[in-house]
Length: 620
Image 1 (cartoon, rainbow, N blue to C red):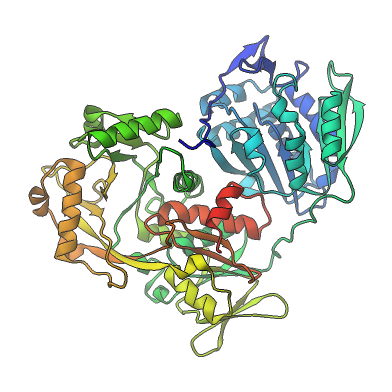
Image 2: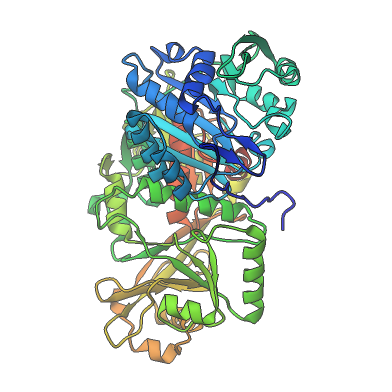
């Protein structure tokens, strides 16, 4: 178990004379004189809102304790009511002990003002699982975003990447929760401050005002709210703060090279922000789904490690984000939540998996241990030694998914051979003949193992991580599924996978060819997959062989880096160029996360992932 990992303990809903109270800290979540009234007087007026966001393209608020969400709801309601509001409102908030969704729904029913109660109901409906990490929620068709950082504030404050214009300092009382009022925390707030940022809090303790001053704020006092005679307001010293971020022009367009999972997800993420895209890939001459023609189904399954390592955290963030981002796609394209059962290989593996779950203390809605009988009942097949069940595991039809994600883009069936940086900062993409294909303000390279060659042809700096990228072939097998032929009710996973039946067919996989070996469907590959299914299901490979549909198998490529992590982010030394590649076997769970990271960066929004994870996957 990593010394840095701390299980996330949700808050329990309790009340003291009708006011929500946290029993762990022995303090109320808001003033007894009224939650919304306090939010408006202390946090909105204390930061000069709504006046300060008017005539702005975007405005970002950062809050140190989300609690019941009343401050966010008050800001959201004020934004909706303001005809001169900024075009986009971003709200970032830390929470060490988030409520569960059922508690957020109960709190929503208690909101007195009907207009705010309706917003609270939307918040409760969208509320994420209480798992560690960063969660991005969007409202008002993306015009209002909420970025939640779940975990200890002293750690998560260093992980948020944003440029905040105003701070709502709203932790429990300093004597009960001093971490929320420390100079170290306020120093992190200065790190993410925009020039001219302000702060406000109901607290007027001398130690808090001194910590704010020491961190770099000019501190003052004004009339308090309710029983508080005074409250604290502050503004960042003139020589501190980051300049306003450069946001993409409304008429700009982004070129996306590659029409697979990575490129398609990028198109969708940018379209949600109103950003135009053009996609370049020769495979498009056969249709938007051509890269996955014959790839009938695939699994989007979480990964879990006993120390919650980087792959586990990226997987969790990607699967949860895909559930929010892709839930409104057409039926055939929308991932189907059916659950994934990761089978224990033997008794020792079962003990290790059970122990990992005990240490991680993840909610059952994310991961739960099933013994042999429970696993067999869940899967509809032998449970072997039991396993970990992930309720959020998803069944995906790759062709319809890619087709739907690409639908907002202009698709061109051509290959980009090189790129040229123009004097005005734009990028010109050229074909093999050296002629221009398209000019774009930004470029996303989502062309897997072909990215290094395109970068080299464009004068890009050689990156050690990308130099070791491998192109690995693999195949899947198709099995008949009928009333008398057992098939799993959920995704079976382990060393291989077996998907539930869809239209009388089950997809099973997969193989890994040696580097340089071309993809193809082979008898050897079928045999290898059947052996994997035998371990997962308890059925013999011989019994499964009679159900093979070899003429309908599928083979394709994966691109993987040596550290088994993707390369996502800005290309060093090439302003306006982003990479999204090296997903290996995790394309479905990592593609939506990579797309959201890049789209948020292009649109100058708060990042949807922790800074330490962004550094680990950065191109370098």
